[in-house]
Length: 196
Ligand code: BEZ
Image 1: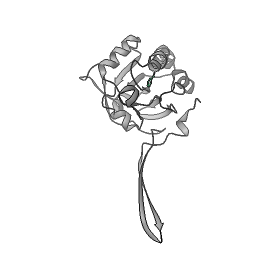
Image 2 (image 1 turned 45 degrees about the horizontal axis):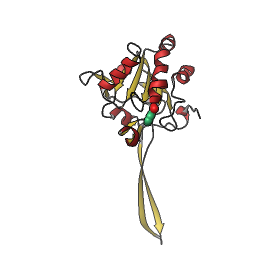
Image 3 (image 1 turned 120 degrees about the vertical axis):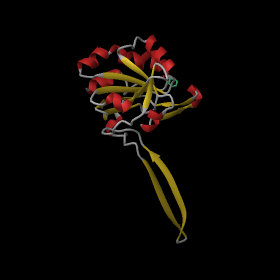
Image 4 (image 1 turned 90 degrees about the horizontal axis):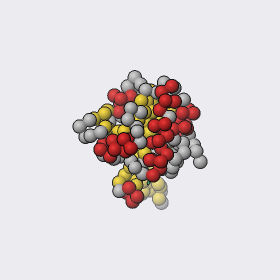
């Protein structure tokens, strides 16, 4: 189901601890503490996190990159994976002019990969000058947005859920997170274009 989850599922990156006390035989015997985290939502400010472009020597702070600009950020589970290569990235590359005509200053692709892999992937898809290929090397951005997905089995590590976002002056204006984390529905280029 293609769902723009921005107004429903998404909630602020919060860490709430809920303590529950149960009365057993009139005594407070059990205390259960659970930790709840929820993904990025409209109105959130992007975290000040460094990503890497082309090499580990080239840091790009995502909060600085988006300051004073309209930026599309989309996240993928992995460079060179079939869905990301056949559908997700090519859509944003081919729609570059449409996004520009709607006032978008930059399009950014993020993945938990190393910057050399991201650069090679972008090159293969002629992303240069259209989509900036930023590596979330240690997953710090993904974690800060609470968009982690354990893909240890298929891809070898915790990765980023597939998502897209419109960010204006560092603030999230729209967000689409794939319901299953890897599907190719609401986070695709045409879906975001229709929201602009
Ligand atoms: C993909 O094709 O995009 C994909 C493959 C394996 C895991 C996650 C995504």
